[in-house]
Structures are given as C-alpha cells and as structure tokens.
Length: 296
Image (cartoon, rainbow, N blue to C red; front, side, top):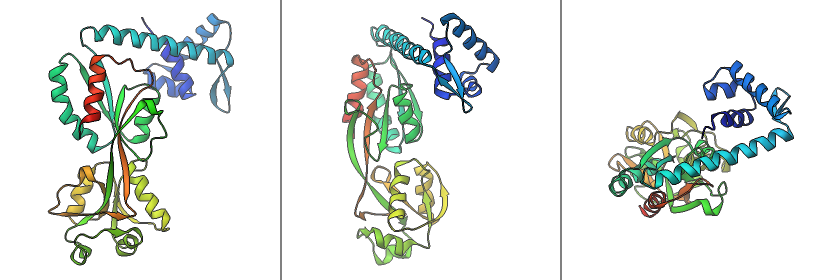
C-alpha cells in the first residue's frame, strides 16, 4: 500500500509553499509541481489556490486532504496490527527532558527483555517540537516535561509526577555562606542575584517559561551568560562558578559544588507520558506505556 503521493499533498497543505514542501520531501520542486498538476487534472478541480504568497486549500483540496489522512491512518493501523502478531512493532518516542532520558535508560532494558522484537526509535527535542510531532501523529508517544497539560486531550496524557524546580547557585557563591539552605523568596532572588550571570534554557523549554515568568513578575532583565538546552552543561557551569540557573529536582545533582534552593512561591513543572490520538495499541505498546508511567 503506497501512500507516498498522498503524503506529497499533505506536506504541501502543511507547508503552504511548494519549495518548502519539496525540501521536506527530498524531491525537486519541478517534480512536485508536475505531480500536483497531474493530480488536479485527474480529480477535475484545483486543490490549491495561491493567496498572499501561500498555497491555500480549495474546498476540493480540503476533501482530498481529509480522505488522504484516513487512507494513511488505515495503512498505519494495518501495518501495526500485522507487526504486533509477532511483537515486531516499531515504536517512536519523543523526549523533551533529562528526566525522560533517565527514565528510558531504566525502562528499556526490562522492556526489551519482555519484547525483544520491538524496535524503539527515540527523538530528543524541545517541548514545542515534540508537541507538534504528537499532534501531527509523526511519533507514537513522548516523555515530556510540561508547564501545563492543555495542549493534549485528557485521554492522551498520563501525568507521572509534579516536579519542583530549584534555583541553583555555586556553593562558592557568597549567598550560600549566609544562607546555606533556607528557601528564597522570589523577590529576594531578584535583589540578591541581579548582578549575577544567568545560565538559561532556550526559549520554549519548561525551565525557560518558569524563569521568564519570575523575571516578568518583577520586571527584571537578567544578564544572560548563555542559553542552552543541555542541563548537564548548565549544571557544570554553575558548579564552576560561571553563573546561576534554574534546575529541576530530577537533575539536581553534584551537590558538592552546586547549592539548590526552593523558591517561595515554589516553581513546579509536570512530567508526563503522552501518546498520539490514533495510536493502535497492542500488548507491546500498552506494556511500554505502563512501564513508562509507573517508573520513577
């Protein structure tokens, strides 16, 4: 069952641009344009109109896209059912946090022992990218750190924990000597550390959303030393005395060199398992979700 050409139309509809669609599909723009022209002649109506530099679906195009999605879903369910007969599933997992990666290192060995024929493919990215992949159904499930759960229907998300986020400073910082362990009021954080370099996660991450909310509340613009999504690098730089940062409980290690302070009011994020809407789950798929959801 070849759905390659159906994906051509879905990609054009999604990208709204022939050049961008061709790049994503790894085909030439001329070939893609020729295929679209041939298809429109075949169905007897234009599928796209050009408006303000974008390709917009016509009513006939919308009908075609909806039908294409149904056919692709039928193919996906059929192949998944066939593979499940011999436990030969291919499961794609998205991960947004260090916690998710740590959890997978614990879950995968016992899971593969139970389902040795299952192939697991892991993609690591930020929250917006993984959210889009779940909603587009380009991955099966994800381990995600989230600030809220509103992006997903309740039957697609499984909250595994609420995780506190700490303010992390070098143990060598003068503040640690005068306050070795008491929580920090958010307004005191701004006053005490306004002259420090901040090591921040990149825009879109859960930690950056929380940090920016604190800064916004007190109309504070930090001196940013660097932005990275590598918590390992951020923690190492804090340990070396380069700056201060926000780190979640699951990544709060190296306490010999880094001091972690709860904030008042406290900051939290969620850890969750999310799956795509039309995922056909057999024994192997259900087993993986249960193991990910119950592991801590």
